[in-house]
Length: 186
Image (cartoon, rainbow, N blue to C red; front, side, top):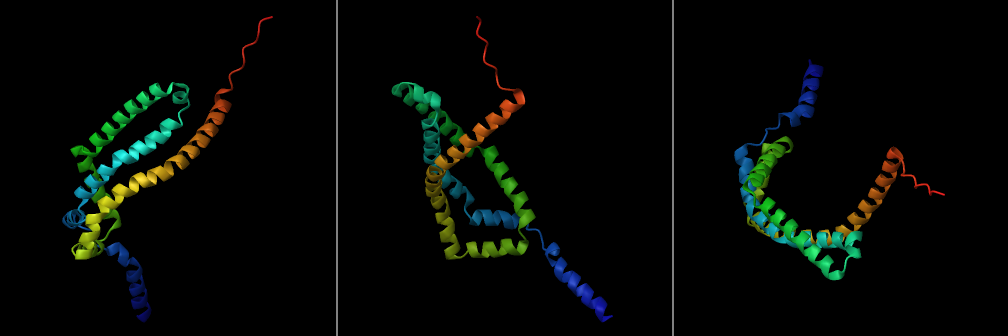
């Protein structure tokens, strides 16, 4: 009998995480509200043009076709590309359908990973002055972080991408065969 009780207790102990309650939409929505997600997104959006500009500028500076053009034409092309990339980013981030989809996606994923107890604990922390202060600063931190991060990462990503594209090009040539040089007529 004692062995059966011991086995049952051990089984319940290891199975306890599977009994954790899935967080409710209400508690997750409260958490997003306490995290001030809307303001954080707005703050991050404010920093996006700078981040995009830095990344795009670096990418365009590496473009071999632009390097062949006279400087004034290259600058005009860069300005045109930048204008439309910035417009696309702003329209995407401000799009109500995208925002709604983002929140729905967050709720779905959060339910898979968080327990009700964890969400309750986070909500309790976010309700404190310290939690509210951190939340208030989070969007600004991210708005400053993204341009700085992109400026640091863009050259590294560009180098890696160029190396990988060169390797891909070589592999593709082995699949389709290298074009043979035209024979000269005698």
